[in-house]
Image 1: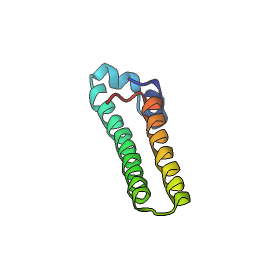
Image 2: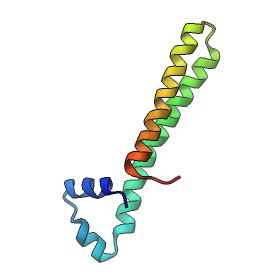
Image 3: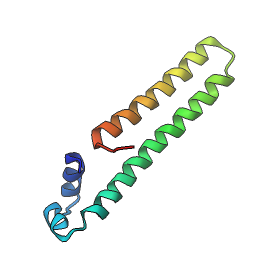
Length: 88
């Protein structure tokens, strides 16, 4: 499990050691992973919106602005995945 997820569980008042000893870690880990994946999906959705607007734009400057937004969303998704150690 990602050390960052363990730190967040601890901050939330969850006794990580007790959860591990009770064998409930897979459930707690799955919950955390689902939240992280939901954040990554939100990045994908916003990136797709930027892509759609970029394809529809006629102005070169507008296309660049939408491409930068799309790229930023992809970068944020990558950083979320890396930070929390989520596998695809």
